[in-house]
Image 1 (cartoon, rainbow, N blue to C red):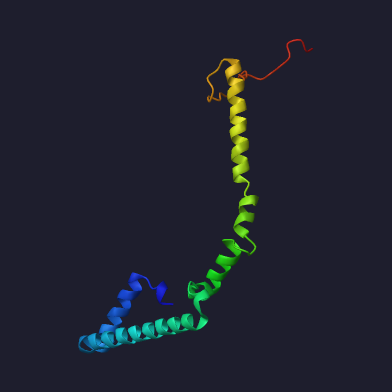
Image 2 (cartoon, rainbow, N blue to C red):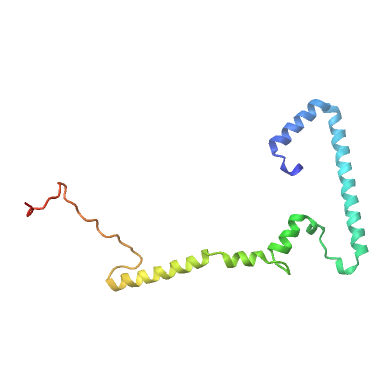
Length: 143
């Protein structure tokens, strides 16, 4: 919620706070808000430390951030491990690499053909367009 605040929104909120609370009460409010934030962070850190100590030494490297649904899906399904390994499947299904290889092979064949024809490899030339007469076509021998 607070992470999607743009600088313009923060500026607007600070202007509204100055207008509503006044410049006298605003510094005291900011100090109390930062103190509350520090207290909440210390409670969270203490709870995390206590949970780690209760779980035992085999869970010392456990990251609580991995419990977030997005991180859980990314870790177990996309990045690999013992899960579905979707990243490997996506790599196997990606045809760009195969198309690049085919394109390189076709380029080599075209260069070889141009070399055999006496032209400089790598310079694909278009055939000269046919010239068409400007007047109407007709058959001289027709009766």
